[in-house]
Length: 287
Image 1 (cartoon, rainbow, N blue to C red):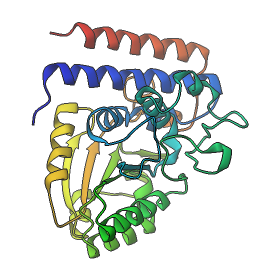
Image 2: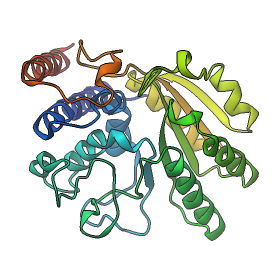
Image 3: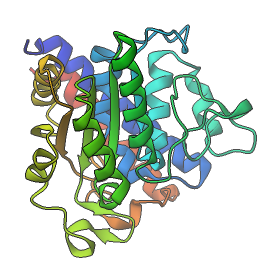
Image 4: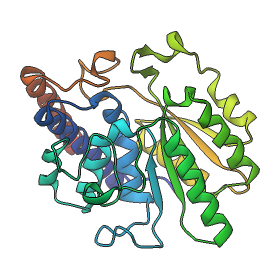
């Protein structure tokens, strides 16, 4: 079902708010990973405000859908989405990376650092994908109704464990598992195709027996349609390859490797915030 115009506008505004919070959080913390957080803001807005069956007031509700951020360095975007969805106060976002905070540099479910809404400790690349497949396998074998969603970075899928998990998921017909690949063409040290080529990417997933969709990861209407089709498909695990822009929404961060793991300076912070506030006004007043 196509997104209604008012729903599309709402999701765009939420994605823009996630981006603003990412910029603010990393600026206040003086560290973090803004680039890869900004590229998944649209996806997180769609999942948390339209797709996922969750209860923010009861984060460990047994019937909830599971979302695992395997590219754990993009935690600022996940935290922003969780806060906006009501898992914890928005004000808590500005404790990012502080000693004792529930919002560590990478998602955590350990002790006092457990973040409401986080399903798995991630950051060791590929391990979140393995955990997500394990959740899906448990759900499949026990007949649980919940679905498992996992977000992977494109640099991350250079890891061998990713393809071991892809093979296992197909063997067990984990059609309750959807993997989103944030294909922003960049990783820590530069561009993926210069470091370790991933193309042709869709045939690689298909070769492992997955059903695959390719979509503009910033086109919320197209992304929503792909997710709906994937949820309805049966018999195989599903991969949605999202063509995205690293640093999306902030002109000087877009396609700039420098902002993979670098917080904005004061002048950059104000410039970024101004651009995002202007985008918010544009979305709000668009016909």
